[in-house]
Image (cartoon, rainbow, N blue to C red; front, side, top):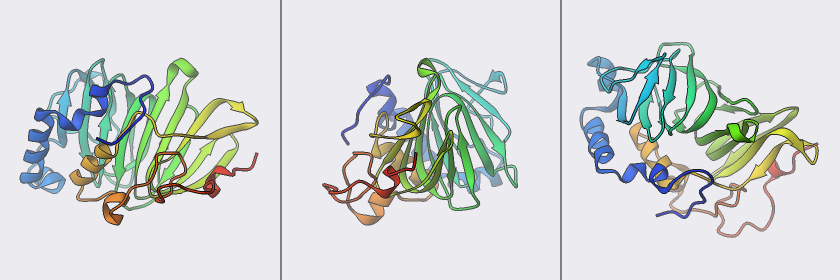
Length: 252
C-alpha cells in the first residue's frame, strides 16, 4: 500500500477501497454500465454507502440518487461514494457539504464544504470550484482531496493530486500544476504573512484516487505516466525533486 500520513483520521477510513462490500459494489457498478446506464435506467448513482448519512435533512438510502443542489451529511463511522455526471466523490465521516448546480442537473458548479473531508475526481469541462471556509480551488479536470478542520478554526487542507487548479486563500492566489500530489493549507490566520501555505500529503492515498478515477473511466496521472513521485508537496514526478515547485514561491 502507498505510504501515507494520517492526521486525525484512521487507517480504516483511508482503506475503504479494500472492503469486500465496496469491491463488490464497484464491480456491480461497472458491470451495469456505470453512470450512463444508471441515468438511462433511472437507477441510483450511489456506488457505496456505509453507516448513516443525510440528504437535505432526510436519511439517505442506497436507492436514492444524489443530484446537484443537494446537501449531504455523513455521521460518525460513515462513508459515501457516488458519481455525478463525469465526477466521482468519496465523502468521509462527519462531513457536511453541498453540491451546487451548474448548467445541468448532473453538472456540479461548486462543491461547498463546511466540515469533513472529500476525495474527488473531476472530468474535463468548464471551470468549477471547491469552496471551504478558508480556501477556494478552481478546477477543470483533476483529482483532489479536500479536508476542513473545524477544531483549527476551519483551517482547510487541499491536495491537487494531479491536474491544474487555481488556488486562493485570503488575498493569496497561485496556479497549481501537479502530476503527483501538490498540497496546500488555507489558513484561518496568516502564517508569515500568507494565507495559502505549502503542505505535505496527509489523510489520502493513491489507491483512493485510482478507484475514484476508474468509476468515471479515467486514470490518474501516475497511472498514465507509469511512475510515481514523492509525496513532498511539490507535485513533481521525479523521485527526488531538487528545487521547489514554482507554485510554492507565492507572493506575499
